[in-house]
Length: 465
Image (cartoon, rainbow, N blue to C red; front, side):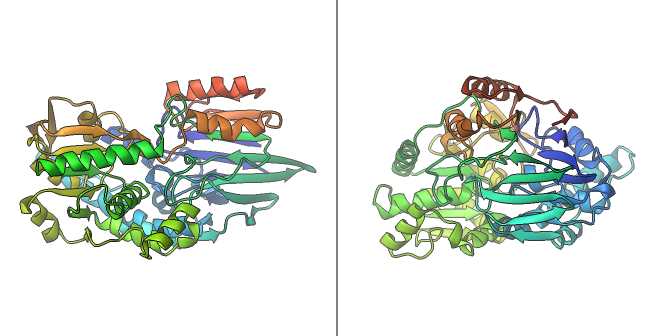
């Protein structure tokens, strides 16, 4: 078995791993690399392997850094199946076409600028139509169900507890009478997260590929996050301000809505208007509603206790679809809470809400997760004195609160506790999906657990196991 690490190494974005065994090629994830515009376009466009030689893709979950380059893969000639969970398939039905529309919109802007400079136009990485064609290649698989994805290769998906439908992937290859078990963790969730179940215990494996997003970090307890959220809401409500929350449409938005629902139901925050202003988040929340079988026991218990069937809808919450309704929020009376995409404030309606709120000290911006370098969200999280929105400079006078505990990723202790059972069995562990320092730190932790061989691969590395 040979593994080529084409993305999701040295960084937390662009997950993409090629497994070659039994003369078959299986791609684990096909995510978008997210970074500086030109570099990202070139890396995403130039796939580093023969697309038409791929036999199948196995997708761990719906987040764009794992799924977002699938339409480009299909556009370039991939015609095989894409195996994933049924819930991930449902989420991608909204997310991938939305991503295609964004690429088309971005290229329209870029080409206007290129035209002014006398430069030829460029094509989008892929279009909405490319994304719709990609959805036809999906094959839904249940947790614990073993499927044959190619000759001599079986795959079983287990609950990773990260977002709705997220999976760890166990790939078993039988070659010359010998079975090799490769386990790809996908993105592991932290235990006791709301809505989704905890990660499945680590199944036996000979080779482990383990994510390391928070490989050197510990999260605060979930109870502390809810307490701090209530404090911020109460403080801003007293001074009649508004809270702007840039949040990813998948997972993060639903978690925040769920917590606000619980706090409102318990009388711990005032009954102020709450808006989710993101068409994608609205569609994604519908996918969450259609898969209640994926909810954890705590969410099921809250639904039963509160008497409300929908954990993502209550009388103070309103979902916004139209542009007109979104614009009207700028003149609506305070206090209020606006949750809007994107999670790193790099695009979408949240930028308009930030523009109207960021210079008023009565307001607050709540950063609810890791922010990539160079993004507007990162600059706000770093509390820079001035930030640029739509090319204009604004003073950052609003309060800034960072809630990194909202991360859907396991922290260092969670990762090591999950991986501990594999120390005596795993022959080689690869630490992936992390910036250099977290990956190095987690690799040291695995070594202390007793793992015999731990490797932090670089982009483009090819290893035989």
